[in-house]
Length: 250
Image (tube, rainbow, N blue to C red):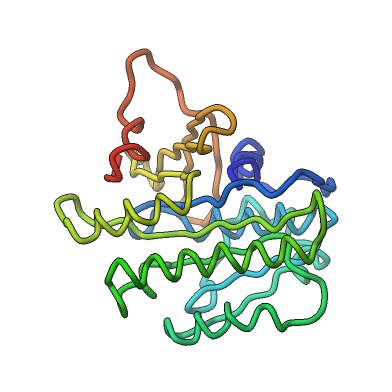
């Protein structure tokens, strides 16, 4: 799902015009960042992007309802797109597993995109590596099932947001290294020097061997407006190159 997120960032955070995408399902993507780094806002922008592609609905899983939306995507908040985003709020790991296991029994159009926000909240209930591997495998299996239902050339994508922790936490580092085996594509969000009344981030997209690596600056203003601009490339700047290879935070 690197290309879906790339389209969102290249459009400046606003969902683009509805164009049908008939490409095969892309590798699952892990969206990584500290608390308050804009992961939920980017997930919702990706949901709007997918909802406007003329395909199936979008399934958005999160533990609690969204509190606010970035203003930049306001032009895309048209009723038809919003109606295609199905929010579900599993309150526990048990309920999330039950929902994913029952996805094979659901009727109606299969989702074209599966989103999970706050994976770390479900992993804290069962922090072991075996539980993390089982949940990751079940998410991939559910997306694969939806892809089969959608049909050839119209696979279901998967994007999962995970909050990163402080460096030096060996348990978290091992858990992240395990998850990266299941999610070859990753997007890291790192705090950047803020301007007056702004919250700025550096977004680095590692598409998992498919396509070129890219970076953007994401800015959130106090009024909630989100803007995205290309990151100014500087020779020898490799500060975000080690995220996917070392399993650590960039």
